Length: 373
Image (cartoon, rainbow, N blue to C red; front, side, top):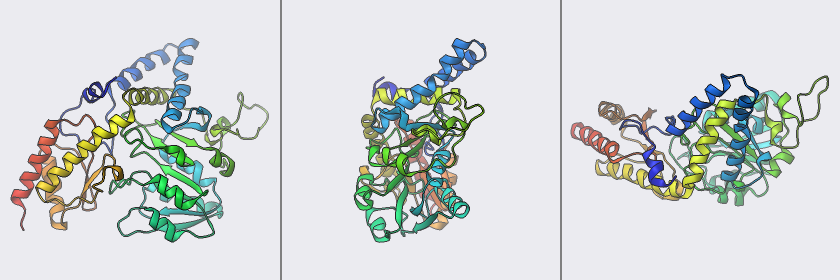
C-alpha cells in the first residue's frame, strides 16, 4: 500500500477532525475483524489457532515499529493504562511526571504511591504544560529514578523531545505514553525504556488494541507486581506457582483478546507498508492547513509551530467568551472536534481531505463574522 492508497482508505464522511479522541476503524481492520469472528464461530481447532496467532504477529509488528526485532519485549495489553500501571507499580524511588499529564499516568502514579509506599512522586508543573528538557533538568534530584511522559500532550499537542530528555536523565528510566503519536510520527522509541500505546486512535484499530514494550533496562529494574498466570513461561501453571517470565510477558495478567490482536496486527501492517516517515510528512501538512485557517481568522493556536514538536493535534485557545461560540460554529458546520476547558482540539489525519478543511474554514469564517471585538 502506498500513501495515496492509504489516504483513500479513510472512507468516513467529511467533517471528522477528532482522531486524537477516536479513530474510526479502517476498512481492512473491519474486514479482518468480520472474517476472524466467523472463524471463531466455527469451533475448529485450526480456525481458533489461526486467529490466536495474530497475537504473535501483532507483537512482532509492534517491535519493528518500536525499532527492534525482539518481540519478547512486547506484551499486548487491553489499554495504554494497563501497560503504564504495570510499569509504574513496579518502580521504586522518585518518579517525575507532569501534573497535567493524561490521567492514565497521574492516577496510576498516585494510586501506586499510596498503596505501596515505595514511590515518591516528583511533580512537574511547567506553566505552559510542556515537559521540556529544561523543566526536567531543574527538577532532577538524587532520588529521581524515572521520568514518565507523554510523547504527545493530549491537550496542547506538544511533542516531547525524547532524545533530549534521555540526555538529561541519563540512565534513569524513561516511561513513555505514546498513544497520541504512535504510527504517525517517526520516533526512535528505543531511546525510552518503556513505551505504551493504543491502537484505537491514530492506528484505526479500535478499542482493546494496546501494547507495552519493555527494554532491557526496564526488564532489569521494574518488578512485575501486577503479574498474573499468563505472566509465566511455559504452559498453564497447574499445582505450582512458577516465577514470572524474564521477558515482557511477565507484565500480563491474562491471555490477550484474539480479535483485538487481529485488529492491531492489521493496522500495524498498514502503517508498516506505507512507512511512518511518509505518514508523518503528510500529517504535518494537514496540521499546517489547520493552523493556516486558524491564523486567517485570528484564532489563537497554542500548539507548537515547529513540525518536529507536534504530531496530529492542533489546539485552539480562543478568548474565554469565544470558546462556546467557536465550538458551536464548528458543530453547526458538521465538524467533529473535542471542546474542553475553553480549548478546542482539532486533530486531522492523513486522509483528511479538502472538503473537510473547507468546512473547517467556513466554520471559522462564520464564527469570525459574529465575533464581538
